[in-house]
Image (cartoon, rainbow, N blue to C red; front, side, top):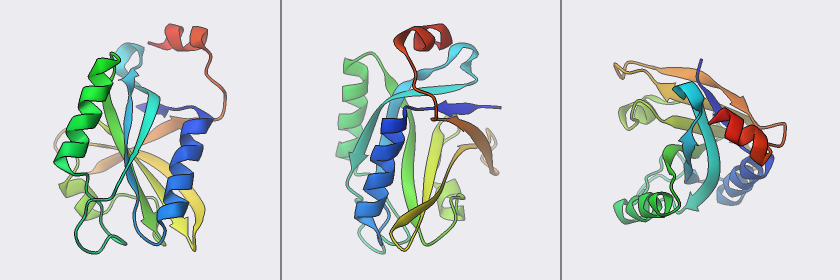
Amino acid sequence: MSRLVLLPRHLLTIHRHAQIAYPEECCGVLVGRALRGREGVFVERVLSVPNGHADDRGRRFSIEPETLLAAQKEARRVGLEIVGYYHSHPDHPARPSEHDREHAWPGLSYLIVSINGGEVAETRSWRLAEDRSSFEEEGMDHRAPVTAASFRAAV
């Protein structure tokens, strides 16, 4: 099973972004690197970006191409890569929608925050199957602080 590893402060950043954006969806980019054996990813940076969706931001999000390009350049500049994305589901479960599946890519993590009435209800991470038919939930590790030594051992 794949897993998404991120620091507690990264999860806090994502949760705050979801609360501030409520009742609209928020979105962002997860930057990091693959764990040894490629069984998951370690997030080193969270880039909160504006929701560029023109209509219905309460049910949809999009990241503008120039914003995504800037995130890719920043990741490469520091020797990292885009490992996934996050977004919120206002007043809906933290499960991918059909719209999410249609716009996702295999090999990346998709962290979804369910936010009900402005409060975080649940956070889950998903990966799209290689055949693009469905999402599979991936494990999340965000409770224990990650030290430089434990990170070097993992990657």
